[in-house]
Amino acid sequence: MKELDTKTARRERILVVDDSTSVRGFLEDLLKEEGYRAASVPDADAALDFLRSNVVELMLLDIKMPGRSGMELLKQVQLLYPEVPVIMMTGYASLDSAREAILAGSADYVFKPFRNEEILLSICNALDRLRIKRENIRLKETISLFNVSEAIASSVNSDSLHQIVLMSALSQTRSTRAALCVFDDSKRVLDVRAILGGEVSRPLRPNYVGYPAVDFIMQNNKPLLLYTGKDHPLAGEVDVLEYKPAIFPEMFPFEKEMVLFPLKIRNSMLGLILISKRAAEDGFTRSDIQVLSIISNQAAVALHNSRLMKDLERGYMNTLLSLNLVLEAKHPYTRGHTQRVTQYSLMVAKAMSLGEEDLRTIRDGATLHDIGKVGVSEEILNKKTKLSDDEMQQIRRHPTIGDEIISPIRFLAHTRPIIRHHHERIDGKGWPDGVDGRNLPLTVRLVSVTDAFDAMTSMRPYRQPLSYDRICEEVTQNSGTQFDPDVVEVMLKLIREGRVENFEQTA
Image (cartoon, rainbow, N blue to C red; front, side, top):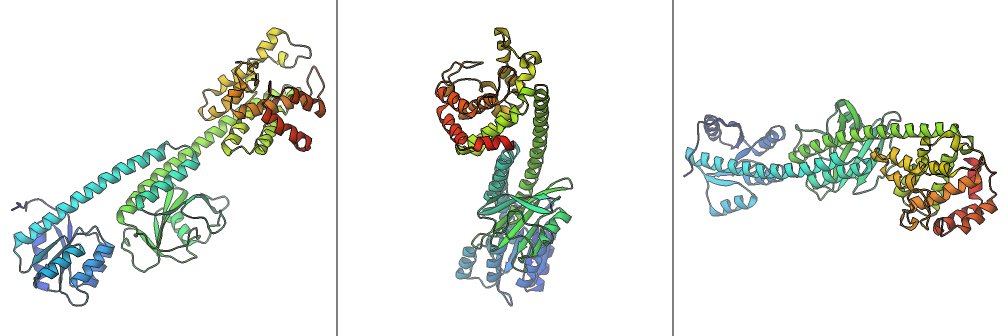
């Protein structure tokens, strides 16, 4: 028989549910002597009221009671509070009732009158099983949350960050619908940045003024659970509000319950994440709320860091753009060249149906493609006569200088191939590296064409701008040797359609 340590102070709260005053008094006294926190109620309704506002580690439940029976209450507790073990007590022992209780999920079954050692051993065993179960759950949650935290913390790109946060929240709460929203206080809107498991049924930027759920989160900086019924098992642990359509913008068809968690840094509200339960899914548990609290805190920090990183990147980019503007201001023959090459490049890229990532690379790379000219003498750049071999060598160093300027800036790494190789050729006779142009990314080959096109349309110290007919002839002659044929084909088509001329005039 297992020895009981009656001297160790315990903090577990045990609820006794029995219609007999003497039984309740006896068990309360016994449990308190053993160091437990004990409470007792006379019937099922009182027990449910107690559970709504108190955390209970174990319940001792009489089978036969007036009103709802112990078996009926057991089934309800299993549904609403599945983590609470229940020991059934009866003075009318039978194999059928014992079997029914065990099948319904009771932790044990004891007969009245019972000896002190018997009921205490049953309690001790049930609480030991509960501790082991909780430790296993906590271990799994810890490992899972560690992986989630690492994924969130390592994500700098805001789009991927939003997706990781939502997928983590769904997997941890066994849900299928989630959204991440960001507050825009200047416009008083709730901007939906990511959504999983459905589509926003209203405009993407619903005005959040007047929505009680949003106002609550803004004012109180704590989570809110929206629910269709009057009572929820988590009432008392989390604020609960009865759902109505006017409570919150309807991002999903509301079926069962939804929890909203603020994304905050100190007292600054960044936004919120919401998880919505379908009718067939289990409701939120205490563990779900704890996990979502950790995820939302991690997400808020990562979101804040992502914004800081964007501000830093914007500052770097503005500095480089200012450097470009100063460079072009000193050389009237190339003024506006960077802007035009960027515009031409994006026009050709869109006509070729390139993806968003390529468009970003082309935009940034074309903007910075001549940044290396800051390392070339102004006299050489503005020289009106033919350049000497030595001067030409200095000019041909600007892609290498530009690459060296950008190389320490990690977030601009995607621009380096364009900056270094925009003067390379398809036949490998370009500079500075003489690489086979067919092995270069399409983004580089595209900017090579638009850069040459703008150079031919622009005034130079040593010549007048070429006509469009002359440019088309020049580009066609060098297609497949200097220029990529596919890019040339699209560029010529845009020129013949008059789109480049019109574009140039509006640039």
